[in-house]
Image (cartoon, rainbow, N blue to C red; front, side):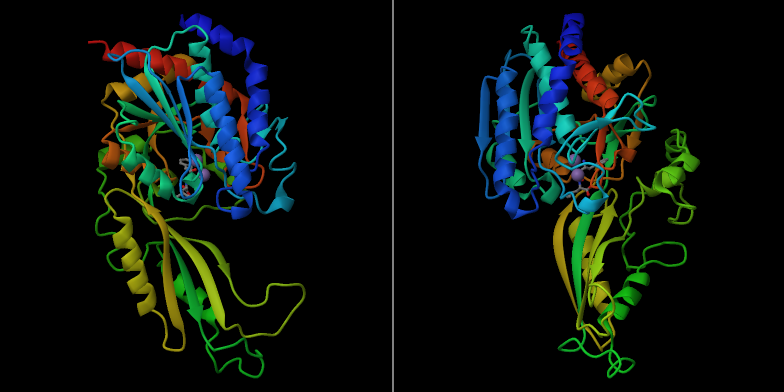
Length: 464
Ligand code: BES
Ligand code: MN
Ligand code: MN
C-alpha cells in the first residue's frame, strides 16, 4: 500500500506545488489588522484542502482573533489518533525592498543549498509549506482509503503573534482534540543529507521598554550635555545587560537553568556543524556568544537576550539636531528548561528599572511569552518519526534541540496531556522571518514522502 501512496505523491507533485503557490499568494499576516480578511481567506483555503483530502469534519472556528481550522477523519475507534498542528499565518514581510521577488508572488529558484530549486515566498517554510505537506500526505493516503490512524488537524492563524486564542480553543475543546500524539512540522533539519528531529524548543520572554527624559524633544546644542539623552541612556542600559563573557547580568536570570551533563553536551556537539559555512552564509567574519559554549549549545541549551528593535529621535533624511524626549526597544529573551517566562519577565523589569539613572523614567511592558519544551525520544510516538525519516532519507535522523519557540507546545502537554513530535523539514538557512524566505522543493516533497511512513509506523507500533 505504501508504494501506491508514494506513486500517487510522485504523480501529483506538480499539482501539489501549484496548490501551495495559491496559498502562498494570500498575505496572511496575523500581526497587522489590515490583513484580517486575507487571514480569513487563507483559513478558508486550508479548509478547502482538508475537504479535498476527504476529511469527515472540516470546520473554521472563529476566535477573538483569527480563526482555527479544524479537520477530522476517524477510521477506527481502536486505532491511534494523530493530531497535526501547524499555522497558516505568517510574519510581516518587511523590509520589502530586500525581497528579490514579491513576498506573496511565489517563484521557484535554485540556490546553493537547494540545487533542485526552492519556492520563495513569505510562509513557504514557516509554516504554510510544511502544513501543506501534511494535508497532501493525508490526501494521498485517503486516495486509497488507506489511512492507518485517525487524524485530526488543528491549523491556527495566530502562531506568529503568540497563540493566545488557540490556548482558549484547546481549553474549551479538550474532548474534540483527544489524541495520542501531536505531530508538528514547523522546525528544521540539520541539512538535506543530515536528517534530524527536533527534541527541544526554547521558551520566550518578550518585553518592550520605554525610556523618557525631558518633557519634549530639545535642541541638542542648547540642552545637549546637561540633560539626559534617553537614546544614549537606553543604549548604556542595554549594553550593561551582558558582561565581557556575554553572560546576562540580570540577577537571578540563570538560577533555574537546567544543568546539562558533560556527556550530554559531548553528544550534542557530535552533530555535524560547519562553522565556516555558517559564517559564509551570514557574511560575518566571526561569531559571538556566551563564553564556554559552542555555537550549537548557544542556540539550544543556553538562554539569550537580544534587542529585536530600537528606536527614538530623528531617523528621517539628512540631519536634524535634536535631543529626543523618548527612546524605545523591544527585547526578547530565549529561555531554556526550567526557566519560567513570568519569573524572567519580572526579574528583567525589576533589574531594568533599578539600573536607570534618576534623570530618566523607565517603563517595561511585557508582551507574549512561552515555556521551553523538551520532548521524549523513548516513546513509540518519537520512534515512528525516527523510522519514517530513516526510511525516507536513507539515513538515521539525529535528535537535536532547536533555538526557536513554539509556545503552544508546552500548553498542549499542560492542557491536553499529550506530547508533541517535532518533525520539521526546513533548513535554518531558509530565511524564515527574513526577506527571501524559501523552502526547498526537495524538503517539501521529502516531507510529503515521510509523513505516510509516520502513520504506518505508528499504527504498527500501537497494534496491541
Ligand atoms: N516555526 C517557528 C519556530 C521555529 C523556527 C522553531 C525554526 C524551530 C526552528 C515559529 O513560527 C516562530 O517563529 N515562533 C516564534 C515565537 C512566537 C511567539 C512569535 C519565535 O520563535 O520567534
Ligand atoms: Mn512556525
Ligand atoms: Mn515563525
